[in-house]
Image 1 (cartoon, rainbow, N blue to C red):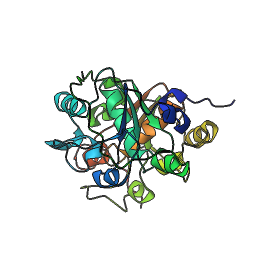
Image 2 (cartoon, helix red, strand yellow; image 1 turned 180 degrees about the vertical axis):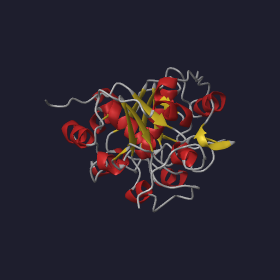
Image 3 (cartoon, helix red, strand yellow; image 1 turned 135 degrees about the vertical axis):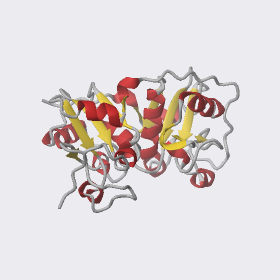
Image 4 (tube, rainbow, N blue to C red; image 1 turned 90 degrees about the horizontal axis):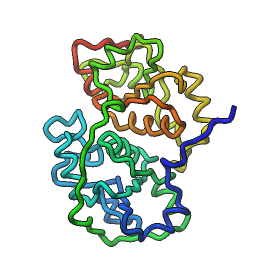
Length: 280
């Protein structure tokens, strides 16, 4: 059977070209401030804010950078960026949608559904000869963002340990091979992977230009590893960024039950109560 795709989650370059001046759309460049200052999409703002720790595009809590900003701080950052309850956000980057899908997940976690990821991001936009700008666009003032946390798409170490033995759970590790085996522990106290997890590095979900692969190709790779729509899937990486990209990909394919482990192995690998498998 041919796999369908939830195209409502993606913005294509043709569509965005026609909506660059729409007053309800907030275009967010999710790369660094330096790259934004060189060139960006017209009317785009940069995902940067004094409250955010580096890397700012992770949207982590400066007081506990393993985890996402808490509701009040997230709402303040979004409001300062001109993103309010009525805003329609289009997120993009030059990194295979890694950081734009992170913003997409963060907004969805806090209940904001009006957000799309630009398919192919900056690379596709630039190669297609679309308009660009080097003029800094100031965020609109007066935006009010109301956070409404959605626990159904958030995983913690405690919830994973309680659920990981369930037959309807799939753990999806989207890190590199070295991180998976434990050869590269990324500075964690312990390296390796979760017992029973499937492994498919996040870079496999997009092509060389950063465009998401076809639904059939994506579904085939995932189903080969036992990650199927009938199961609830928990994605994880080192810090919940690549896992958010995988989360987005699964929702793009219509997977109904997906959670992102925001703390990921930065949390899991530095606790003493979490089971880990390390390849010999």
